[in-house]
Length: 130
Image 1 (tube, rainbow, N blue to C red):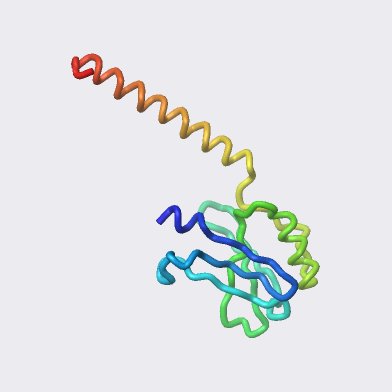
Image 2 (tube, helix red, strand yellow):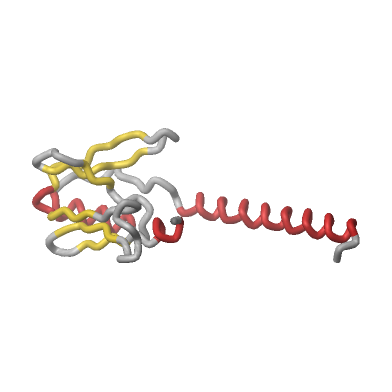
C-alpha cells in the first residue's frame, strides 16, 4: 500500500494538471484526477490536523475540490506553472514539508535501525544462540 501511494505521478501540460497512479493500483485505494486549467477557479487554503497548510483547487462549478500535490519534486516549478496557467496568485504557497525534514526522518530511522540491530545482537550473543 505504501509503494502504491508513493507511485503518484503529477503530469502538467499545456491543457491540464493530472494526478495518476499505475494501472495495478486499485481505484478504490487511490483515485487519480485531471483538471483543465480553464476549470480551475481558485486555490483554497485549509489547515491540517497537525497545523500544516494544504491547498485545494476549486473549480468554477465548485462541485469538488482537488488537493494540490504537495510532496513532489520541483514543487516551486509546479506552483509557478499553476500561476501562469490559471492567473492565481501563488506567492504564499509553500510545500507541506521541507527537504531537511525528510533528512531528519531518515537519520532518525537509521539511528533506530542501529539500536534495533545492537539490541538483537546483544540478545543473541548473551543467550549463546549465535
